[in-house]
Length: 121
Image (cartoon, rainbow, N blue to C red):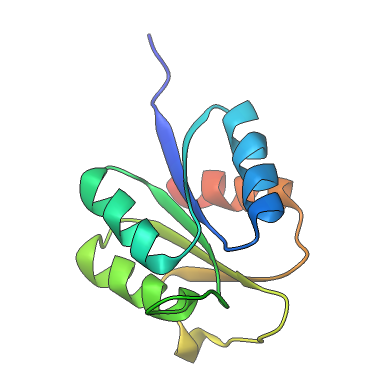
């Protein structure tokens, strides 16, 4: 029996961080999509509505930051697991949509993976 295809969209304007996360999740068996800003992320989500996890940075250039993107994803794609990360901004649950995990940067991607596994179970 084939394993269930898992997918994640990594949204970060810092290419090195985005690429490192993409490689980590690819190595863990995920189909990985990458975006450098929220507008690009929305285009990818519209084209691939089956994406299961969105991991986004908060501070990014463009029409919206990662918090606004998280709210957009929660409203448009409700079952999506959301992970919001920032090295500069401290957010509370009140700032984020329901069922969103916040991480302070730098973070260990293995912790994110364990939380995805836990929340997906």
